[in-house]
Image 1 (cartoon, rainbow, N blue to C red):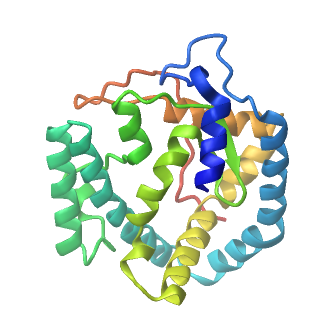
Image 2: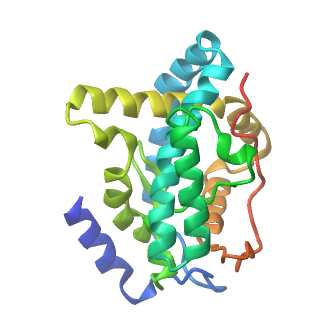
Length: 242
């Protein structure tokens, strides 16, 4: 991974993109390769992940899936709070910490989202966004096998985010894999309907996902909630199931 990153950074050189990615900059210099990886990921999803997620959604009641979502989301809230403080957004960081504390205690380790009920909304942040807040450009778009869309900046942040994931709490490899698999399947099950809608409306699914990803990752919100980038991709309901 480190060798691959070094090669990518060498190729990108001085053309690293800023968060606002001005007109004329090359967002996808490795499009030919990225499309091949994207096609591979689509085949894996169609052959393995989607059928497993479909069976999972039929067997597991939606309230249980929602509780699992809330649990993983609560762990993410803790990491988001850390990143908010690293970004210097202390007011929002305190609010996010309060949300994490409330859900971790009153919400039974986050299974119940009490924080949202009392007005403590989620502010999702990660190390990639923190790097961006520190001035790092988005970098060229990359599609990784199995991991999907990314960028040079977000790839560099990936090890930090991975070490803050729920599976890393446990030392046993089997438990780590089990938690990772549960999170992946549960998330995919929640997006089954959204995926079908995307297949129906996107003339070029690769381009649609790429542009949506880069737009989302290139926008940052300040403590007042105002975004520097106002263009956002269409929103879908992540809880929508079949």
